[in-house]
Image (cartoon, rainbow, N blue to C red; front, top):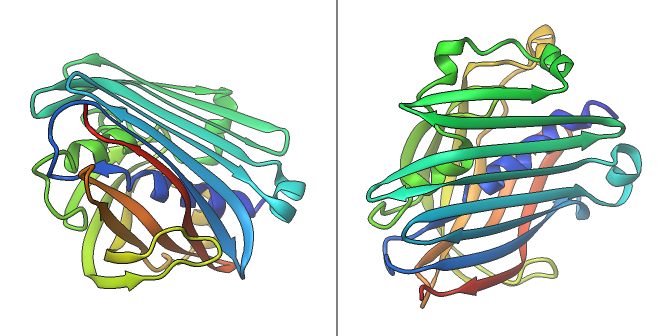
Length: 268
């Protein structure tokens, strides 16, 4: 069951990256709380919660993920992440990014701090957990934001279509390029798991690793998986784009994410 870890850990990251404010309602404080349930062959396998607050001066984005059902019984997998920073006019200045995970009895913590001038200080606990990954050169640890900050920065007011951007990020283990590409529009219907019904834009999401590979994947010469698909809906009255549906491909087949709960607080 240890093979489950890389695939299931990748899905919450893709989900977390999709939170962003839209071009409207540019002032004041906004808060959003979202829950998505991920299904494999119709069975819930894990849950993810996103809580975010953005004001004129600061931003704070948090994610919490937990395996469910049989997957929980075998893995006891949990993961959290948090990005905090300052809003400086058109720029976001990250202060700290934390990401911790637990798989069975194995725990790891990644801490990124930003002392200034584009510098990034990386700390991974325990240090031995680095051994599963090829190292990212010091130079490539610099000058790239964490995943959560990158999305908020790209899709702040005036950013336009959330399906039309590309940029590099560094998460403590990998530096990679994320590309969101437009893929049409759909009208979604409510389901047993999804609370949203209405129009949504569809994006293809691709990742390209620049540095930092999982050693087992290199040894097996794993083939790249198809891009993920994410549907965004813009909620009237609050000016926010939210992920309402996701499809990610794993070696075990398709994993589908559904918007099971949301709470929005308009700009004040």
